[in-house]
Amino acid sequence: MRFVVRKADFLQGLQQVARAIPTRTPKPILYGVLLTAQSDQLYITGYDLEIGIQMHIENSDDNEQNIIQIEQEGSVVLQARYLIDIVRKLPHSLIRVDSQQSTVTIQSGTANYQLNGMDYREYPDLPIVHDERGFAVMASTLKGLIEHSAFAVASSEIRPTLTGVLWNYADGKLTLTGTDSHRLSTQSTQVESHQDYALMDSIIPGKSLMELSRILPDTDQLVDILIENNQLLVTFLNTRFLSRLIEGKFPDTTRIIPSTFRTNIVFSTKDLHDSVERAALLARDTDNNIVRFQFRRNNIEILSHSPEIGKVVESIDPITFEGEDMMIACNAKFMIDALRQTPTDQVRIELTGSGSPFVLRPVGLDDLLHLILPVRIANI
Amino acid sequence: MDKQFVFREVEHLQDRIGEFYEELGAIKVQLQELIEENQRLFLENEHLRERAKFYTEEQTPVQGEALKYLSSLYDDGFHICNLNYGAMRDGDCLFCLQNLQSRS
Ligand SMILES: [Zn+2]
Image (cartoon, rainbow over all chains, first blue to last red; front, top):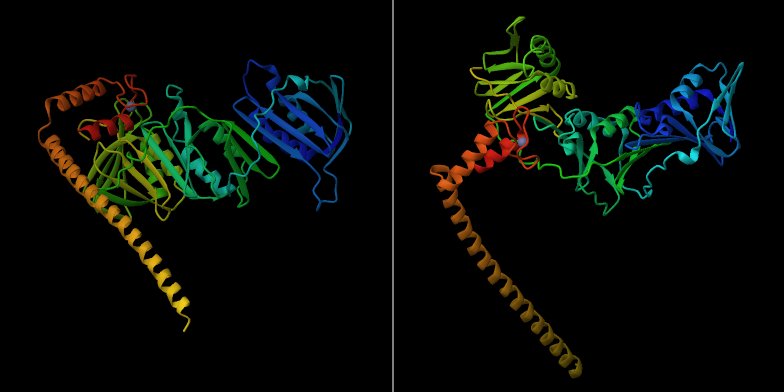
């Protein structure tokens, strides 16, 4: 295998693929990145058996300058960490890679590295997903859906299905839901789909989705999504992203979201976020990171106290207040997380009782909802 | 006027009237079925209402006992939701509470 590639493109590809290189694995070959030169394209692949990222570098028609020039086809696996560090520091804007037997020469300007390559035949194949079209959604929209739901998944593996985000597709609407059984976040969006496309409810690991959201561009370019053969395949630009699914049944969450409320208060998202964050400073040492909210029509206070450290009272003015006074206590982290994933300037809090789940909704954005279960404590 | 033509027209009309009759018959059967179903649902609904009232006002011993058992299990710190029934829980669980609520 022999090729010359532009440094900037090679480095960008390697950095993107590096998200699928494991930090610890019993299979050393997975520490490697698979390089494949084929016809006039260079494929770069990383795969930790959970997620796989593959991207290719090719010359575009509208760019007269050559980005890649394949001189001899072939494949090799190189230690990803070393390769990325080396490429980042190479002195010249072009890099020549030449693999003969198991020795790989990397040359750029004055630098000449000889690295030990690994046998590409030992590298596991990426799962095969047939490239039928599923549905398409804008990259920035998908990024938003993931960020607004994946943070709420369970971090412990005790209940594996809750470590994933439920993808439900019905009537041209894609809904992502994440919950750890104490809180739940869900968002939907209209998507462009091929007629008759049916998607089974699928659970995709929250961690995979976080990685995906990091490499998704923040643009309105369309991303193709397909779930097949127990894999999620997301294709955009020159990148293919694959993730395994989580097997099992996701709990029914439709009945958990309350439909009627006794109290409904609108806040400035930022003011509420900052107040809760300040109150939470003294909640760190308590059992559940608890802050208390006293929602009173004429005076709203956020309180927290730590027996050893002291106590704090935050006052905050609502924008509107409808309904009766309400006292609740909840994990400050859940509240802060939800407010961080509220993309509008104003947020509406809907409450039914101090022991019932309450809801946060971005004002003016109907399809996103965060639900939090309060903590029951004596004499709030 | 062509007598043959008139005859054929009448014959054609007769056929269509026959078809109308058949369709009318089918619709009548459907209507009958709907009326019966409506009656059945009405009765069922009334039954359910009665039972619901019964449960909210004074629960039957079995229902009460089952609920008491589940809530005491929950209060002792165990999940009673389908997700992992009987496992130790860490804080309140949305799905358990949902379960308790829909039973009470
Ligand atoms: Zn539970």
